[in-house]
Length: 107
Image 1 (tube, rainbow, N blue to C red):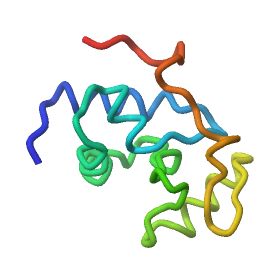
Image 2 (image 1 turned 120 degrees about the horizontal axis):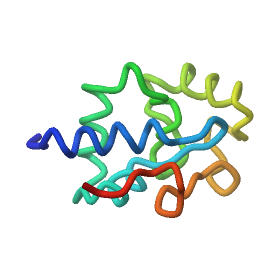
Image 3 (image 1 turned 135 degrees about the horizontal axis):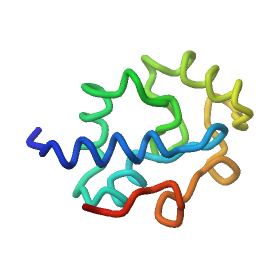
């Protein structure tokens, strides 16, 4: 997947800005970063997120990826995120990246 260093850095900045006890979707990050698809965010997260709060990024359905589910949901629960039937309550936990003071401006 073709991405620039600037796109990777922008995604990293956005993920780093997600506060404890909140989540955002891959689509939220894509929109805030000016990317055309959430899949690009997923690719970046798979390849470059070990030092980031990766567990705060979730699919649009509120369900984590199956291979990460138990670890991701446990971390989110520790932060006070509401979870019901293996799904994050996006209504209560979703962080608005577009109106966050923590989000640096586009470069």
